[in-house]
Figure 1: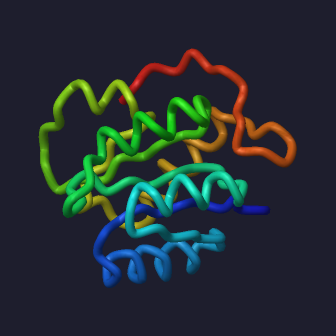
Figure 2: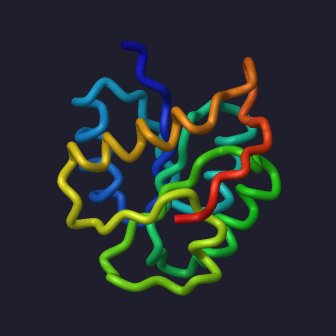
Length: 136
């Protein structure tokens, strides 16, 4: 099975490296970005099937990052990761899935697979066809 590339956005290098190693052990190609600017630049240059976005980013508004991604790549699935049990509804409308960071790696992999199967990529582009999927 050919696994897609995912972009992980987190401001903590150790967390990014751990998440990258975990997902690569499940045959994913993992790109990493430590801030919203780098993430958007990477999305312009690299085709990915999903974005994993950390909610608590130092000096970065995850809601603004999610909003920019959805404006530029409306059908690119965003999976929000957080340690918080409850999230503001305004960010939940911007993301496709919400995952507690306590979720085991196998559960996260299943969620990535589900999100990427709902959103089929346009050939050679991060542009996705419009979908009517509801936010998580």
